[in-house]
Image 1 (cartoon, helix red, strand yellow):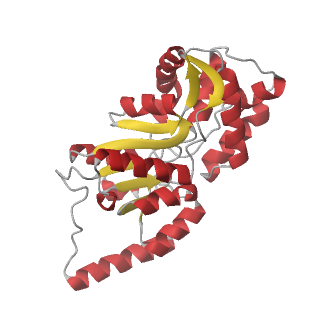
Image 2 (image 1 turned 135 degrees about the horizontal axis):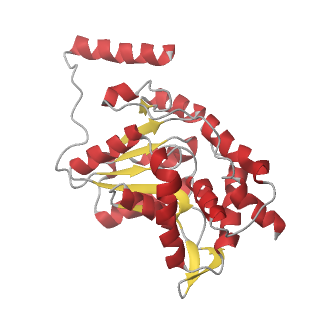
Length: 286
């Protein structure tokens, strides 16, 4: 906190010396070649969407488990550390695929709407949502870009009033999930490639676009745009952002929330008990 305060004071004094205390308006209103790309987990929403989705499926008896607490620490660790564990996330994705295999896409989309209301709506960071709304108010398109299943991401984007979502695609045949992925999970460099492809299709100038993420895994995506933001950053992203003078916002403690006039969201408190186990144990028991 002391380091961040010093950095902000230095920036302010430099601007005052140059007679430029007011930052340029951003996002730029009416710039139709600009857009914004938001990571989802721990950037827009507290915790991981796939764990919340698994919790909702467990409630609906898509699978059973005798030991929910065994894997609850995965979600707790993610929320408290704010860092993805690749092994946890891979196991969660594989388990989710096996759970939805044989179910209809339309069924999962409908359930996703219910799960959003039950477990996700209250976990949206108000500060990040305000940033997304600022882009929308400026007439710009806003996409979620996430490793979560595209069906979940699309529900969240629609409920937040965003333009759409890029996410991991599960294979379906005749509207029924096969239990396989189409390609690889949308993670790390794959996000950057997806954003680049979307920008080309939409006629966007990436140098005028913005991207927001909490994870160092998304540095490739953040590096693509002219306005990268580190939101609730993990330690590696925070260090990288400071080195390159990227903007930081941390809504976990309220340190940065005041800068955009939005109250900080509730802290990372209690663990969502069965969230991780709900999608991990099923695979072990099959």
